[in-house]
Length: 364
Ligand code: GDP
Image (cartoon, rainbow, N blue to C red; front, side, top):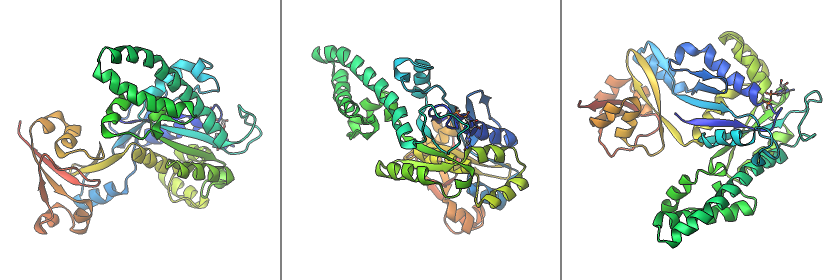
């Protein structure tokens, strides 16, 4: 599955947020049959209002959301790239995730020490990212020597890698993350093989005080502006509120949310933002037993999408009976959509769209 790492300086609210995420998932565990929770890894259901609507129309007994994994990566302090704190261990954890959520402290509280002695989320983001850039810089420089040798003796793969390493180095030396590299499609493959930490997509999570959960505050505003400038995403959340929400029953939760002027838990927005960040889309399978969501990356073709359910579906793929989400809802379900001629038979080249309701035909 896809993994999003939660990263940030100490005392910014990472654990509070992570625990709220996994507690909520645990509380609703009945809906998540494969929910595995390790100390710092949690699988959460991706909230999607469409599932309930599909389930109502098709009278499905069960709703099964698709899942996303969050990893709480502690130990980032100034100097981590040089082995301070948990150093290398922490870097290897970041290497394993597909995207990074930077938790930034945007709440004031004199009782909770800030490691740098001041509340400045943008400076914190820079501190954190600098450690990752230093680690990338070192790994690029280390690899360059070896690649140069191989390139000299005619190794084409090494040449291709050197070209992209140069692009990455130029950025890193200028204090910019590798994800800003402008690459051709061919270069992208070589670039991905470098597995640079700062090449991963990032999301800024502003942890604000409880009173600012609905609209954010001056700190989170600055982060939002900086994120927008880089074409990055930011989310405002109050980890404290989320941890309180996680302990409540459904009806209490609704009341608490409306008191705070919130439409839904901030975690829902965080999870969805993580999902978008990873370039993921959802298709559905719907029947009397269950209405279920499945995750694929943007651009996935029908056989590979079927393979997410079972490898046999991919191997023996014949075609996919497909109904667009809006048609499914407005025509009252599968029968209505069929009668209106809105059920399409899609083949091997079909690129699955977000919201498609699919039924795969396959041969064993
Ligand atoms: P981590 O080191 O980043 O994992 O931070 P923690 O989640 O352990 O939080 C550090 C401290 O800050 C704890 O005492 C939390 O209760 C507190 N904290 C977390 N979020 C908030 C918040 O939004 N407001 C306030 N006032 N305190 C918070």
